[in-house]
Length: 398
Image 1 (cartoon, rainbow, N blue to C red):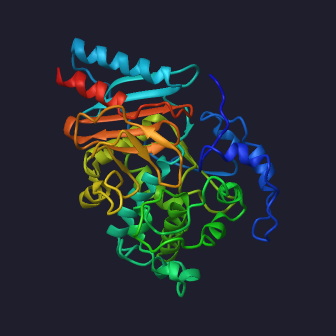
Image 2 (cartoon, rainbow, N blue to C red; image 1 turned 90 degrees about the vertical axis):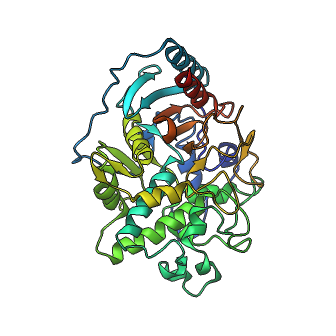
Image 3 (tube, helix red, strand yellow; image 1 turned 30 degrees about the vertical axis):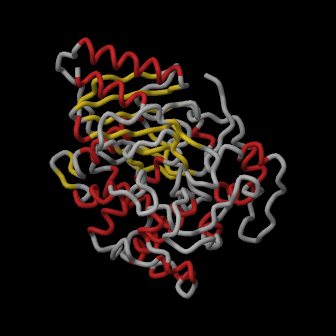
């Protein structure tokens, strides 16, 4: 399997890293160039290179995903074979397809398997949104319309404190998204600094909150900071512990790791959740079942519905989750970001929701068809986002 240069915040990070000088700010004590260099050439399978991490799920009671015992039609079997072939051709690592909560198909490349952890990149963002729903239901967060300054003391009297939590989760905060021409140092700081929260809270406003959709990792980091502060104010030690107790264990997952900026430090709330396909499948099933799994309402159904509603500035984005409708042939992350994801055809269902991890990591959920699909792979921007989902939907309809 070919290796790739790792990029979390954008395709140019690797090439930029070599020409940047280390940061000298007192907060950023780490040699950023050296930290970036340590991950050069890493693939989605090289999760052990990301240090330090904190493990969650060791005490969870894993709920095994059952295999489907239903006879499969010839058309569906052919569709699954095509989907698997397509995923492999696009540098796939794993493909797991569930229908009504049961495994129809799973396959892996090389030495990977059901227990193999991969780098999920931005799929962590969608998990963060689910945790937000629980925290709001428990009164830890008052409302999505609360201002960030209510939770982040550094922004209490700052214009950025007027950004709402909703605007952060909708990616319309107005916080600056650095262009690829000048983003190298900022990208590396948010990835590799010894205090990434300090870096995130230093981002300036570029526009009025709510004015424009800009997919920006700093939005997720700031949303995570607000949540962590609220959790601590309510007696919880950490986001990791709350995630484990309220979401990860209740859905029946086993272990995962969160990438921290330093020992005892902050998670990368926008990325850095390393786990296996079965765990992602159970998270997908939670969404498909409107927040209910194993006879328990883990996330409020109303929150799942809210996550799926489109942002005011982008009909294809909800609360840290992507929407398959309306159709766009090239899905852009922002006007400033040159990266675009191909959707070769409209989805064959109107209710497709998905987690998007950089370059082809996906959890697709299609409630109307009882589908949850997990796909992992090496970073590849030739990947067509609609292909696998539509093949399976078409196979089911025949």
